[in-house]
Length: 63
Image 1 (cartoon, rainbow, N blue to C red):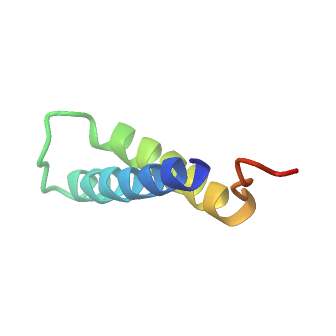
Image 2: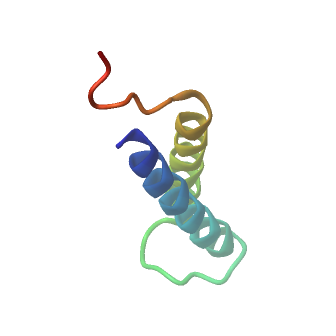
């Protein structure tokens, strides 16, 4: 379950980071503030990568 959440955060962070950086440098594809997209994308990307790196899924029935 944690790996799925981490993968969603990583992919969402990459998309937001790309759209934010493109918006900062002139090609604004959204109506949102590009700096907000860049910062949130960076936070989500780093959170997702760190969850993938350090968290391990525990088996459901560990006896």
